[in-house]
Amino acid sequence: MSIGFVYHPRENIDRRIVGKGGTDQIWLHPQTDKLEHTFYVLDIYNTLLLHPNHIKNIPEDVLQKLSTGEWHLLIDCIEEYDIYKIDSYKTSRWSPQQHMIVTTGLGRLVNFCNFLWDNYSIPHNHVHYASPFLYDNKMLDKLKVMNVTTDINFHFKDIDLIMYGNDTIEINTNEPKYQYCALNAGNPRPAKVELIYKLWQNNLLEKGLISCSKPKNINYEKEFMDLLPIRERNKNKHWVQTKEQRQNTELHELKDVKLYISTETMAQDNYCQITEKTFRAIAYAKPFVIIGNKGSLSKLHDLGFKTFSGWWPEEYDTLDWPERIDYVVSLLENIPDLTGIEEVTQYNLNHMRETKWTKMYKKSLINAKNS
Image 1 (tube, rainbow, N blue to C red):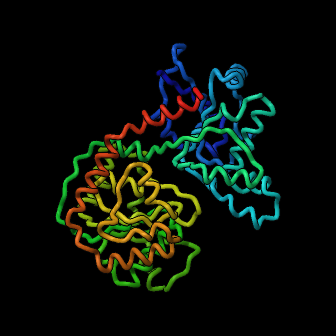
Image 2 (spheres, helix red, strand yellow):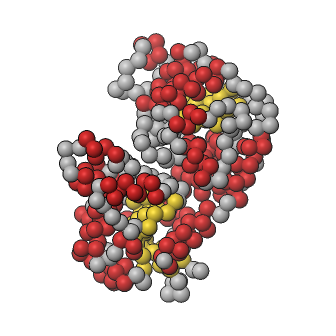
Image 3 (tube, rainbow, N blue to C red):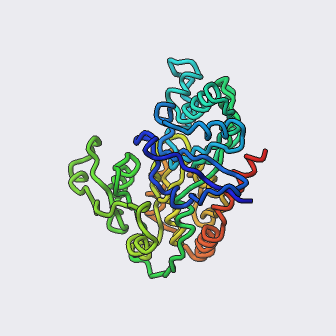
């Protein structure tokens, strides 16, 4: 079945929420009259700011097609942002519905769809939301507690997973020079800095390949702060790099690493988003542990990947990020024998490369539109 995407002009989307542009490169196909399924795409970055005032000048003929269902609307979100902070409504000073609209990206999404229905007769089930988050019935059931109902179609799409999956970089195995890596340059989020601090406290910095930026509003001992930044120039700009550039930077370093520590972007939040920080380890066939959200390993299992319970306990997947850091430090103090672990890392690499992530996404869109 043929499928096409017509993109809303970027100049008609508020610059605060416009996407990075990766979706244009990966998904945009020529629009023809012969396509069986057409989606009109709002390519955004930040769902929390989604508001009618930020999306301007949708053509009248497009609005008519979205209303009748000839076309469907696709809200293509590059990254999640506070979309899952629903439980906090219990202590909110607002009503449950108002709390969700004000404080959660999911609330803004539902509210935006309500606006489309009220003003243009575009029903919720003509709207699709694609993001790196795996939505499940348990999460969506929480909306019912708040007297919110929606028929929005949710889809999994992760441009980082697709990007690394499309790479065909030749993986060379070296005798590890470093016991581990903790590449935390960039935005000095609390989990990133706290990990490096705990490694420093336990005299483990010299055993690893480290990078870390210096925070402005976090105070540690002066001796530690004087160490920062560490290799700050090694900030990752993966979304603008070519495959060859990633090979010359990321792979060049990671080939010398035994164990990969992924400090996820949203480690301190209460929803599970996996980013390039973890997919990079899979792409370069490295065993890894994740300092991130609860359920990170479970999400990888749901995506078909394997993890490393045969070499270390993975109950840490139920811990909050400060406890995860303590677990990782303890693991690095006594890294187990990794004999045979290549079977898992090679399986993950093959699964990443061989799975038709693009085809799965398109099929998900078509199936939802047909239903």
